[in-house]
Length: 373
Image (cartoon, rainbow, N blue to C red; front, side):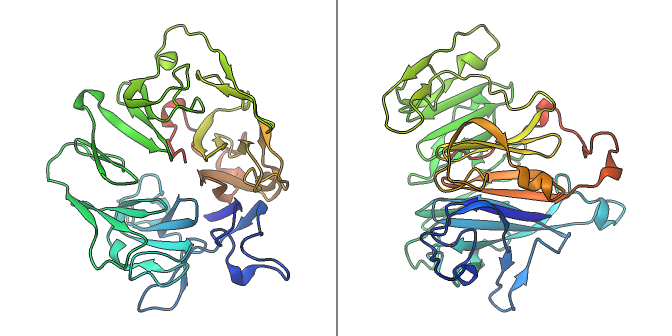
């Protein structure tokens, strides 16, 4: 499985300074087309090891902030028949995790430069990265580290008690969730029955067990989907997606940019009629979607090349990123940073599904949520 990146590269999150061409600097090297990124784990006592590009026993996930990229490595244990080949990343039991950072070189005290393994992350199950803090989720605790201080211990931590019910997807924790900034622990009503939470820079989106969606935070650009631009201090249900009839309208404001319309109500996006969308992710002003056929579609703001179309143009309609199809690659995951995009892809194998080249087609109930940054 390979990871690719494109978009804002001002701090070497996609392509490190050593790999820039003559005349380029990290500050002006925006990447407008997908390039393969090196997922390198520099352990403190070992030589640098390239993790995910050649090691099928390691599952790597990407977490992003504006200036940094974090690679979360998890050892995949063999399946019940002791076969590594049948232990798929989506279902295999994960072993001890570790986090490696690239980009802006401020991290926890044991992190040595770009690509360094964060020693304090050994054994973590998941992570959330922001500009000021790094939150690490373990089986028995959550730790939050200040990225700008030389700390010897986490600035905040929380014990996760045993027997707290079903496991929760981070940043959800028993009774609430972990925010990007202090106060880190934020309570949630138990009546919500939250199963997934995506944290944006200024707003949050929550999915409940019954399939309802709640949003809160800043609504200045219509990102809450309640039909106006007002903020919400508490989770509020998106009535337009609760199964009843709704009327969608536009709230328009005047801008010099190409985008002048704000969609304050949820509106159906016509990505493609030939297949379903299986995964989505959004940045500060752009969106990316993976289809069940392994294609990647992007739209929105493209000033830094984050749409992967080879230009810095924006688009108000979904467009397929042809690079992956041209290279015979099937996209399996996408993670948007605020101004860039990271994509995981594998070689297409027609023998797995001769008719449509689909590997384990997903249904609407399999859609995964990603952070909205």
